[in-house]
Amino acid sequence: MDDKIKGLNLGADDYLAKPFHLSEMGARISAVIRRKRFHGNNSISFHELTIDLLGKVITVNKVTVDLTRKEYDLLLFLVSNKNRVVSKNAIAEHLSGDAAEVFDNFDFIYSHMRNLKKKLTESGCPDYIKMIYGLGYKFEA
Image (tube, rainbow, N blue to C red; front, side, top):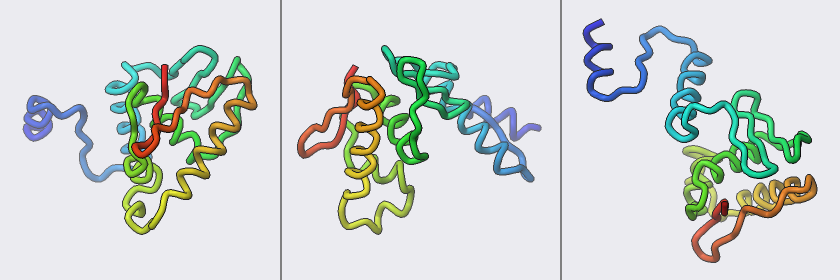
């Protein structure tokens, strides 16, 4: 108990004692991300675009858009960095974790980005995702 109190008083957001289930750890990490990046909200709305963080569902004008897991993660990453340029390296690391180092090009990012943008625009969403030549991508508000 003393270690928990000390860690929380030093600035920790949460404490998870061993043994624990990975699903509990994942839920706690998601909660911390919501608190930090999305002010505790369970959904993010931007004009006609809504992201349900708990259900992992994207809607445009209240119509569900079917995205792959990577496309959802990509959109959420861009929205959480709204109005900031996100480098292709940062996107690669976010989408593939440690495996990003084995890729010799960013073709997989271009493919996911193209598919995501196509699905959103076909659903009636304006193209908020802008390519910043030589730097990366930006979700413009």
